[in-house]
Amino acid sequence: MPGIQELQKDLSDDFSLLANWEEKYEYLIEMGMDMPAMKPESKVDENLVKGCQSSVWFDVKCQDGIMVFEADSDSLVVKGMVAMLYKLLNNQPAKEVLEAELSVFEELGLWRHISSQRSNGLTAMVAHLKAEALDCLAKGG
Image (cartoon, rainbow, N blue to C red; front, side, top):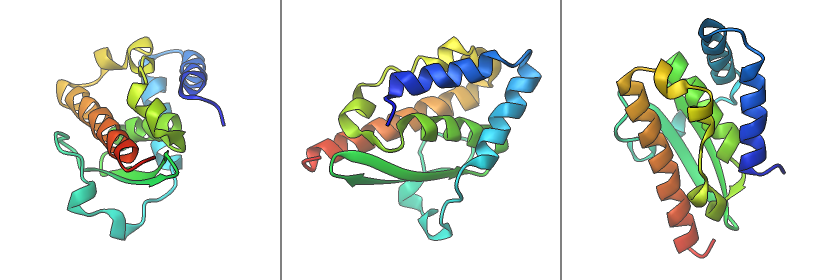
């Protein structure tokens, strides 16, 4: 399985093929729509990310030190950002998730093109997943 850095490069390469931010938003939304569906019973308060204006859920399981999760959002653009995190961090070792420098959002200029609420939400999602990675490691993963 490719590592987080390699996956970031792949994502960056994919986005670099798009001419403008309208196309990049469309691609982001498509990524969200292509994500595997989250089980309705996983959309519970304990899986809800605090600090997001939209509803965002991550149901994270720790399997032998590997983070495996399903995720969803009720907002199309936010679900696209969730899909990026899903692509980058799902099925990765918890230690690597915890230490990951997610530079792809900066490289793509995403921070400059999303609202401050969405930017805060993305920061909250990353913090949530890193906290889950720490928990996974603490449980002997």
